[in-house]
Amino acid sequence: IFNIGKRMKKLFIKFLSAVFILSVLALLLGTVPSSVTAAADGAQIYKKQCKKCHGKKAEGKRQKKNPEKYKYAPLIKLSQQELLEALLKYQQMWNNKSWENKIEKKMAKATKKLDEAKIKALSEFIVTLK
Image 1 (spheres, rainbow, N blue to C red):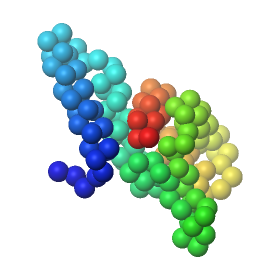
Image 2 (cartoon, rainbow, N blue to C red; image 1 turned 60 degrees about the horizontal axis):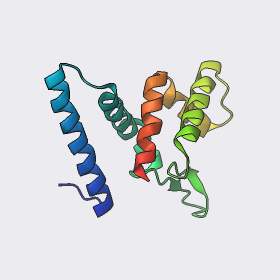
Image 3 (tube, rainbow, N blue to C red; image 1 turned 45 degrees about the vertical axis):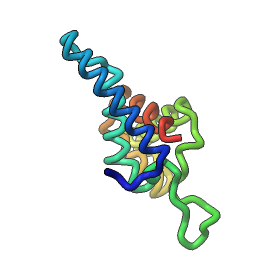
């Protein structure tokens, strides 16, 4: 279906299977577990707001003029806690209008509409891309 690597296909199939099973359980129980909606939120947010700069697998993007340096940092090297703290820091930058460069401003703007639950879901999703 998609042009992605074998590992990503396996992860995607496992993710879809888990979502399906949890959805069936939710229908039987009459509720949707928050973990299901959180995982879906994290994936959707990443696809919409992060993927363009940080890449499909959060591998980052290198500078064209100096390929040894990153223009957009790889996120796969960070723990869930480090991601959470960084995203909250960027959100605080937006609230205080305290960014120091274009990249910080872009990151701050990307987090401005996310509540803490969505930021947590996003950080949890990113670590699954490792």
